[in-house]
Length: 474
Image: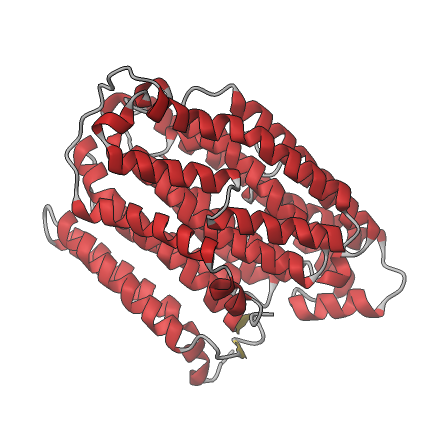
């Protein structure tokens, strides 16, 4: 089979990352102790790839036998993934040095994982979504177990691998059933098949359900969430930040592609999504209350946030999808910032990761305490930060879709979340015990954390800056 050479133009963002990743791999193979060089090459490669993606942002082409779609939608997510990867790499250098695991292949694996995410967001075929998921997942298995001398890190990698491999079977079998009933894996043709047939075979719905299960696992929705707390706790903190932002955004990008509004409006699908959203919000928020480890708290909080975003999907209207994209953009900044601060303070043997360690932090580290407070306020959904508008857009879409009860449940669960988010703020500012935390600060790390907080403030004051871009993506 041959394809036109101009099809390669649609892979411009991917080529930038792949070339960078291969250069890093070659450097690691040929030069000893080259992790610092790999670090800077990775940063330069991602920045160049972001610029190239922005340059072709509005381009729209379908290539590689209708399997890959270049569009503003895919480019938006590509930029989001690369920003998540870039911030993760910036925060990782000091963190890996501090824990004695600074190896250059770490950066190459992050780049390959980002390529997998971009494939998912730009897919025009279920096979490309599957390939993207597998490329991303294999890289995340390795990164979760990167702290090879930590038992929890090894446990995190093994749990994530076993459960994810099991869920991949659901996804692949679902794709097979959809292919068996529609004779295609092309997403546009599957949507056309659904739209033009009034009576659909049972096998088609079973296939759709299995695909939904596979992607629900990736977004960490209840009841497919059991891997999240242990994996988030055991993985290196910077990788936890990357998994909770880039990987979650990639799974939602695939969900939005596969499930168009007319399919989501089906009463059976809408009910299932509403149940998943409700269960995720309730379970995630209630269990997060009892956590004393901040990484585990943020893990259960991640489950709850998946529930909020599933409300937007269940709404089955353009407002819901726009709300998901805005929410994901804010969520990347919130979680990169929160986990970034944890990575700055964390010491070997997983020290300084509990709520008690942060008592009185504001007296010794006022800058980082203020930024952590901003991230907690935004995660709660308190104005004037972007997290508030993320929830607002999603809840408004639910009300417009006559899912008012789901929006009310989301508001109530947001109130519950205020307890464990603001608990950290209270401990930092209103408890006077002297913190034992001490660390040397890197101006680059501080700048990344500050930029994340600044982004939340800017998009919270001027949400239209981001929403105007999002509304033109569909």
